[in-house]
Image (tube, rainbow, N blue to C red):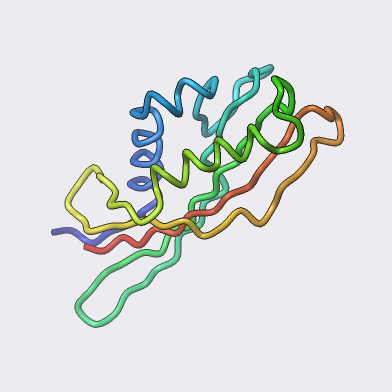
Length: 141
């Protein structure tokens, strides 16, 4: 097996596939994005601001990957405050937490929820809610 060069190229597509393959989540959002199109209507999720660190030991090549989800949701539709964004976060946690990832080639991996330390109201649009959630993935050859 060749040495792992970047886990980000493996993890981000796996997370995207897991999300887009879930009809419940996709029924709640207008899309899952890396780069959000102009004027994209709410509610949507971005997979961005990811971080990869080497985690090699004797005889093992590994990577620690932090995946950041930005969840953008409206406060309307009878769900005031952060309710809609929290519902979307719950679906993301259900799909990813403590789950094996299906990657494009043979490596062992798992992913787990690491928290949602940031919840924001958009200063330009008081109806937009934004939750930043982080997931930690470990990838090993």
